Image 1 (cartoon, one colour):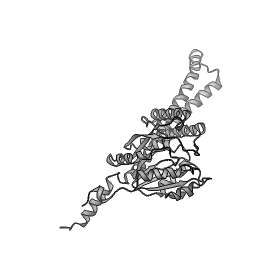
Image 2 (spheres, helix red, strand yellow):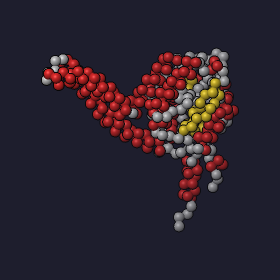
Image 3 (cartoon, one colour):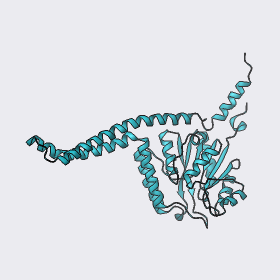
Image 4 (cartoon, one colour):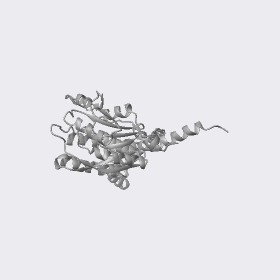
Length: 331
């Protein structure tokens, strides 16, 4: 039987979400074709108002369209439609270093990882705006505090995925917060992942960034808090319960002192408020406990969906071994 590298090479797909990238998409496609000549290159046009689709098609890419606006919608469609063993996702703006892709793919396969993140190393001050760098550091630190560990560049759009990551990932995001959701998915399922430093270039002339520092930063922050509520309900609702109980306890001190001294509760509205706060604290605490059980069940389902897909690098060889065994005569 032939070895894995001789018999069955992994099917690699380069997937490029694009919106108004006429000025850069041909250069991006050419760079990835030179770096990964065996890969199929898919460009998903997200309602571009320029000639992105025509230029990409002329450059030899497989062009498809996603009509729901937003990068999250495009990633959901790409992950659902494209069938491959290894997925290389980048932006179509020629800012990511396509020459790093072979090393990232090799590391994913050799170490049987599920995601390799291209951590950006700036080659030009104009490539990565100061506001974006500050926001990335802030959100990366917050993710590490909330989920216990993180990546150095959670907002990088340059990533290599295994098939089992892509086909087990239920995309919920609509916009640029998709990278954060991807990172949390890997952290929650405790997937084997890695980071590789890659060069990050300025956009070519005529190409403009679609990322808004404040609007999209706020959306990413909301996504982190939302995912924390969904994935860590016991801690989230426990914190709410603690705050409510603390406020209620502080307000009740004077009531207790007065009651112990006189046997009376003179400020009835305060007493009612304290009672309400304590009831809400108890409800929040038990809601967290119940939702924690639900989340564990959801995590088990996602883990089973993840394990249903073959590991990167090992599946083709295993499949070949099974096929070889099937051809052997039964004694």
